[in-house]
Length: 211
Image 1 (tube, helix red, strand yellow):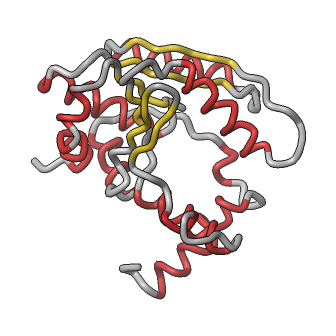
Image 2: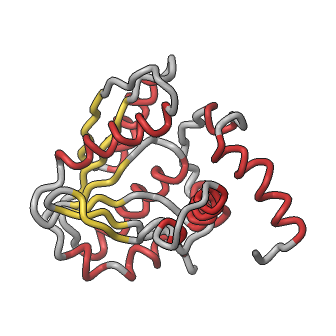
C-alpha cells in the first residue's frame, strides 16, 4: 500500500539519519499527530536518531492544559519522549504572530548542533501562505512560500510534508484512527488565514479544481 506520508519521510531518510536528535513540533492537531505517528513508524524501520515531541502551551484556550495532557498520552502510546513547555503570550493585536514567535523561541532552545525540528506544514498551508503574502503585497522573496528547510539555532527545520495535501493527511489520520485536538480558533474566519482557508480557497477550487 502506498502511504504518501511515510514515503515523504523516507525520501528524507539520509538527512534524518545524520541528525543528532529529531524533534517534532507537536500541537496535538491532526497534521502534527500524523507526522509524529508516521515518524515513529519510519524510525522503527530505518533506525533513525532519538525522537522527541515538543508541545507548546500558549495558554490561549481554556482547554490548553487538557491538550497538553492529550499530547503526553499520545507520545506515551507511541513510545516517544515529549517536552511540554508553557509560554506567556501578550494581549496586544496579532495574537497569532505573538504565539508563533513564542513557539519558535521554545523550539530554538532545543536546537543543538545538527538537531532537526520536523514541522507538519503541507501543500495547502503553502497555498494559503503564498496567497496571504500576495494579498499583503509581498515581494519575490515572500512569494517563494514556506521553505522546506531552514536554519534554526544550531540545528535546522525540516518540513517533509510540503508536497502532501490536507486530504492525504486526513486520510492517514482516519486510516490509523488518530484522535487529535480540534482547536476551535481554526474555524474563526475573522482571522485572515482562516478566511482564506474557509471562504476564498474553496471558491477557487470550485472554479479551478486543479489550481
